[in-house]
Length: 236
Image 1 (cartoon, rainbow, N blue to C red):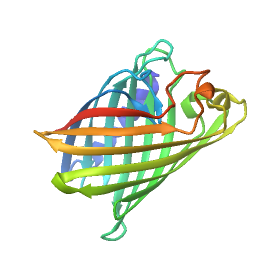
Image 2 (cartoon, rainbow, N blue to C red):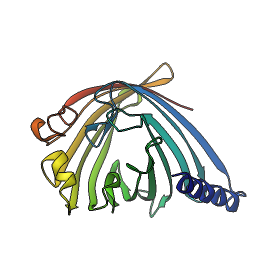
Image 3 (tube, helix red, strand yellow):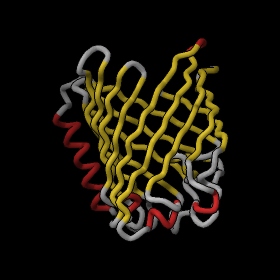
């Protein structure tokens, strides 16, 4: 794991050195929430979470970043640590794109859960049309994962937003590992999140869920069912 982390960080540093003459924007974020929902599935057994990260963006469109969160229910690890980078830009004034690589690390358990994802996104008038791909989803080497998804952000009074997202995890599950966890090779997830700025922070309240039956979700765990989530976030 240390070699993989070093390779990712080293690549980011070399990229930063190569683009050093460009304008750079650094941004950070921290969130406290009632649950960490990842594609509709709780990663904290529906307990609270503290999350944070930062991004470095160059005016050429290249960016790198890192993000972390506590997790529960994993073997020998209580943390998710993400490393990512990509390139974003505009085709036209109304149409943009984003190509992204994400490395998921779960320190403390070797490489049991670690894996890579690749994403392509097209942005148009508040919509984001995306597709994700991994050939080892959650380090399940026999599970190839494709994730078409759509997001829409509606602007509201008082600088509030109402965000909608629908995604479909579509897998080629050679060893039935994904199917054993969710009862099917395909899982639909969705979310509706309202956010409003108040006193320098962003307050969020929403509903998330999946189409997985409670009895099929990890042997009866209630981490896939429809539930409410509240959050407080601060960008810096």
